[in-house]
Length: 419
Image (cartoon, rainbow, N blue to C red; front, top):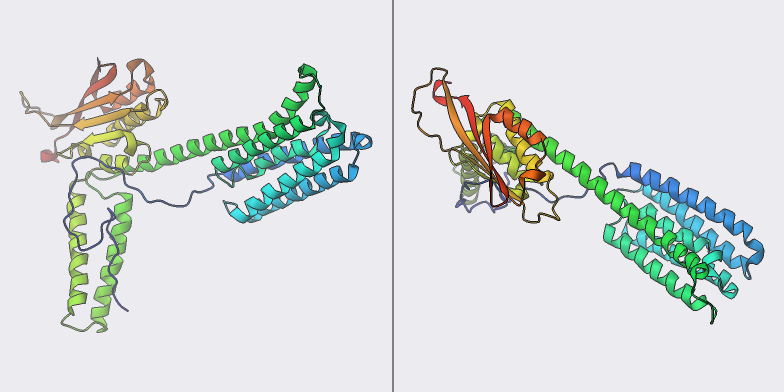
C-alpha cells in the first residue's frame, strides 16, 4: 500500500502551491458533471403517447387517401419507415441512458428524412401536397421522441431543416399558374406548422421543466446550511477533507505496517508535508467561512448574483429563524426578477461591523447591522413575501437608491462573549 498525493485542493489548485488567499467575499464553487434526467422520463412518456396518437391519426388519413395515390407503394413504404423509427426510438430511449448516442440520433434523422422523401414521391404527381402528405407531416411530430435525449439546439435545428425542406418541396410541387390564395396556402402552412411546432413546443416545455427542477434542487441544497454551526466547511470542502483524511490514513498505515521505511524518503516526506499543509489550511478556512458564505458560494443561483461582505463572520451569530429569513430574502430578490428585463441584477449583503453600544444591555444581546443593497431590482417588483422574511431577521427599514432597493436590518443576536 502506498500513499498517494492528492491531485488538487478544494479550489482546484495543485498541491504544493501553498500560497492560497482567503477571500473576504463569497465566491461560486462547483464541479462540472453530467446532466441528470431530472424526471425527464415522465415528459418522455407523454411525448411517446402524443407521437403514437399523431401516427394513428395520420395512418387513418393515409387509408382514406389510398385510392388517390399515384404510387401507393411509396406512401406505404414511408409509413413503414416512420413506424420503425417511432418504435425503435421509443424502445431505445426506454432501454438506454439519459442521453441518446449521436449515431442513434443520426439514424433517427435519416429515417425521418427517408419518410419525407418517400411521402413526396407518392404524392408528387397530384400537385397538392398540402392535402395529401401524411407521413411527412407526422415525421415532424416524431422529433418529440428525442427532446429529452438530445440538446435543444440539435432538435430545433432538425425541426428547422425539416420545415425548410417541406416548404421548398411543396413550392416546387405546386403546378404553374396556381393562385396563391387562402385555399391553397392554408394547407401548405398547416403542413409546415404541424411538422415544426411540436418540436419547438417540446423543447420549450422540457427546458422550462429542467430549469424549475434545478432551481428547486439548488434551493434545497442551500437551505441545508441554515442549521450549520457558526463556522463550518462546505459540501465541496467536506469531500476534499475526506479525500485528504484517506490519504493520511494510507500514509500512516504504510508506516505502521513497515511498508514505508523510516526515516521517510524525500518523496514520501514531501507527500506528508503537503497533506499536513492542506489539512491546516482547511482548518484555517473553517474558522473564517460561515454558513452564509457556503450557502452563496455553493449555489448556482446565488453564486452568480449575490455578493457577501462579512469580514467579522457575524452571520454565524444568527439563529436558525434569522438565517432562514435572510437566506429567503436573498433568494427571492434574485429569483423573482426576470433576467431579460434586468440582465445586471445583483444583490450585496453586508453584515457588520457592530457599533459600540451606547447603553449596556441586560439581555446579553448585541445588535448586528445588516445592509442588503440591490442593483437592477425595483421596489415595486419585490415579492410581498420578502417583507415577511425580513421580519424574521429583525427590525428593518427600506429605502430607494437610484431606482434600486436598499434594506437596513438590525438583527438582535446572542452576545458570543456570554455564550
